[in-house]
Length: 171
Ligand code: SF4
Ligand code: SF4
Image (tube, rainbow, N blue to C red; front, side, top):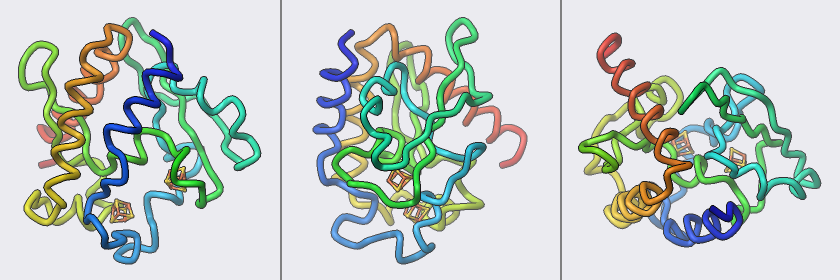
């Protein structure tokens, strides 16, 4: 897998789609999902850090996270200054507050991340009808694409499992 090529295609699949289309959902919450720190930054997908090697001019910093996947690989967290050039933001920012849910082997559908409910008013509303349908379709297409990569599938599995466990204990 060539990380640069893989994630540039992934970013193009989402394109300019955002949760509310032309409306800026950040106005609902003061861009709460952009205020993460080294414990709550954005998870990078496997090898996505390769795209951020030159990103330090944007004050991106990378930190180990407790989130593990596959055979105990630790995902990295990206922490930013709260502002970025949108065209180079990581994949987790582009799909938030959706996460993959494993619906069949190597098949994932987007669900609202239950862990985001305390932070994100869209996740708290828990109503997919509020979302721009083109955004949901683009994320669906993205998960179908990412599922083609054996290096990424364990990460999707782990995200799905974490969301499922959270729902089981807290929903
Ligand atoms: S926290 Fe939710 S509503 Fe706020 S900017 Fe992020 S995705 Fe949009
Ligand atoms: S990289 Fe950009 S979109 Fe992602 S959390 Fe930071 S400011 Fe928000």
